[in-house]
Image (cartoon, rainbow, N blue to C red; front, side):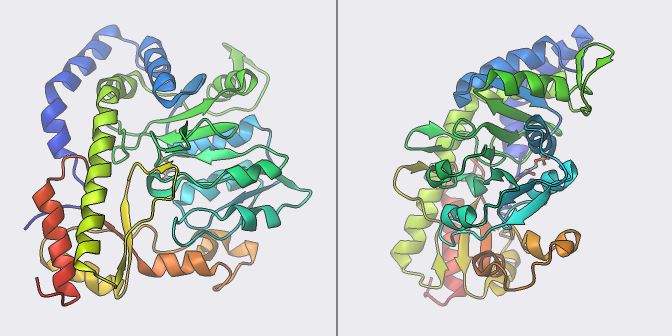
Length: 368
Ligand SMILES: Cc1ncc(COP(=O)(O)O)c(C=O)c1O
């Protein structure tokens, strides 16, 4: 068996000629950074996401950093976020000079618990930064009791919705990543900030070009974080396929869950999808007894799996100064010890999903 956690090769094979033609056009245009191809993609992706503005930037990490900069967040400020996420979420807070304040997750959704987050608000809290982890939106409605802005880390959640409202349109800004492995992936680094606020949109456009509102005239301290035309052209080719890819991810997830539940594997908890949510399954992440042994057994059968994330951020050396110790966030620590993401990509075949489920059943002795 050879079922990888993730592969792009099946998608690249299908779209190769279309993408090569788009790349050739950019090369012929001689316009490589920002420009009309980037504007075209920004317009198309804003429509797909349902936001008034989409500002293309160099990567998802910068999208987060620029969103916090656009709010004027800096030293002395606090931003509340989850410890169970990719480093860049909290790294972006640190880059502004503000203090990340971690708050525990709900174990069933892996997302920030809004009531615990609200309890951490102080006079210094300038923003909330929930993450829509693995493609499931965080519960944001209670956060309306917080008087400041909410920035959505939607890096893994393009196309996700809650009660019909899309990721990236609920908070003040939404931050997306088009890293190649994401649901919509470039051929390199790329990112995006969405907003419905005209003022924030113009701030972001200035901040991504060294804080220059016109060329060589710098009123603000910005950074160099522009989207490349080549990446934008590739993303424009892929964007029309996103809806079908997402449907396929959802179907793969449903097949995994049905398989695991039908066999009755009590050692495994499939991902939950609360009522009203559209989970876009960037990852299909189970919680599993004897997680490391299961991953090893799958590996021996040629099945890939990955632990996202093995160390909660409050236990990372870079955040040691914040003074959180082991035991500070029990749900995040329980998640890091038990999560396992199974192979997930739209080109995964039904029989491959079935083989993964059967291997898991075999490992726990369910007689398959
Ligand atoms: C939750 C989350 N936030 C932020 C990022 C950062 O995005 P990028 O890798 O494009 O900088 C990623 C992806 O890597 C992510 O998964």
